[in-house]
Length: 426
Ligand code: EPZ
Image (cartoon, rainbow, N blue to C red; front, top):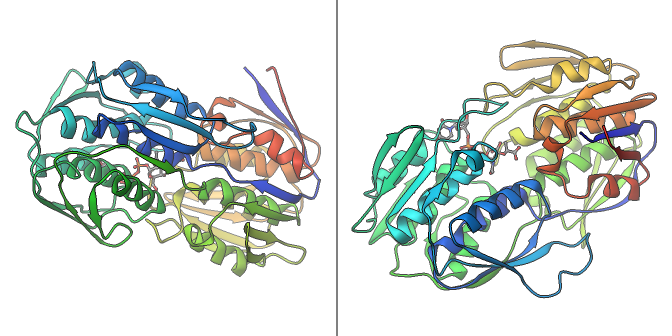
């Protein structure tokens, strides 16, 4: 198994090209299931999760072709998806267990072909990750839902019909499944208390380009007028706000100066506001967002919330920052029940962290010390990379497959701006 070796202490300075967003690309890759016409997605990141979902779509009979010149490795990929001939409506356990977002084929398949059989995703490192809200949303649109032998079978032989979907809590995935299903449901659908993340708006933009009639995405109420069919389209995946936020933290921790090329400030305002409060300097430029720090950083408190609140996907990265900021910082994880797996690994690097339930109190230390650590989930992996960038000596990070799910060209991007990082066989 490969590992990363990082020698800490370098100041990072320069430009980091931000890739297409994993959490936008995954639902976007399910939209072709809604139409028999080709859908082209550009700015797709080269990530393990994208490959896994492509394998699932292939398994279902979706043709996937490289679209046009794909340019340099550091640029996003363009792929055309052709779902004119869906041959299989089953998403098998061995694929779904690797990548929970496979559940996002449920809504489009039921809407287009009237049936979907998808393995229950099961839990993951950060929590139980139920899908009850996905299923309730589809039932509200007239789908029959059966659970058998670890699979969800959703069916709507006469097609879906518009309905009212009231989410008790905002769920990103359930909102995405509901949006895609409602686009082809007969009549009007209203989604109350949907997720408001930028990835939801990106998905709605793509669906509108395909002919869907959607209003209110990004707000607390979305209205969809179902249409008989959707047509092909071309859509660019939005930039990855979580990747951008991760490199913003790297700029602060190394007292550096990074231009996050392609990042959109309004996608990550809560994180940027906190960075300014901590003492970083944030400025919007034509080509992206610049984050720098050359002064004192203040300890801070954060609580993760649905968008537009502080994103849970940036919690681990800010904990790495808190570990080296003088004073006591507090982090409350209010979205997932087990998203502190990075704490014991950070403590191996010398961090001083006390966890009580969903709250962590981090007392900043003068210097972290390099050590062998283990990645446990995607964002925890990045937390350890950030800590390694400032730790004394070498930090060896194992189980890189977690990192490769969500950070494209990580070593190259870090080396471009001055980090000493190598990927070596384990
Ligand atoms: C998406 O997961 C993201 N994944 C996650 O990013 C992100 O952390 C999460 O949204 C929250 O922003 C993708 O977009 C592929 P949710 P999702 O449904 O849709 C509960 C990363 O690191 N819930 O918004 O699964 C759930 O348990 C990943 O890139 C139900 O109770 O998240 C959680 O407590 C990790 N029932 C809360 O809602 C349901 O049916 C929010 O989950 C669904 C969710």
